[in-house]
Length: 290
Image 1: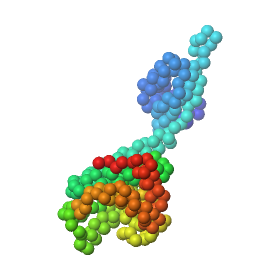
Image 2: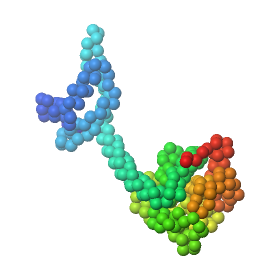
Image 3: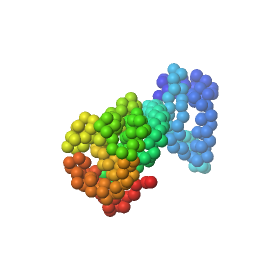
């Protein structure tokens, strides 16, 4: 691993092995102290220099073999090159750090949207809550649940470009105003498409108003063309919207919302998502946060 041809060649390079081989010489003392105190050590990780001055990460398992009187006779163990694993860990850590910064930025956008539209404040948060509960009921993995939460929280991010007076208008929208609202799915997609999420966030945002029979927007796609996450968002969005107060009407309640999705089960909304939603509210007494 260190590219020396023999132990003698390695020892000939210096009288201070710790300083010559260990990137952090104090690791050698730490390793020996633990080994001599415990008699055994597992998965001790440190960096070492190769003959060419390059470095590798190693993991050491070792134990003391004692003589008949219980004194240290010799040491034995294994040394594993874990450089590639460490590199992968570093890449993952950097990716997670970048993702966290990205999410912080998009969360700020979502918060700004809620501040502009007090009537739907909390809508995205409650949709995210319900979407995650539906996905969990449908057996999504932990990783996919994390993505579902992000999608729910950002699904209406495109409304950031819609004038606040339209979002909070108490009366009926005219055709121009309604078309501006409908454009939010594509606007949201364009805002998010340049961000490298580990989940299909931008696609779910684009498709969350599509319907199984092709009557939705913006593209009028249908059936299997709509990703599962968007189908879940569609149901969560409708149920939360009907159950909550809006500028143009009072809250219609959960029962009316469930009647709507049941009536259009398999027509507008995915049957599996509808069934999961009914189970949540009727059998498991799920409550939307206020």
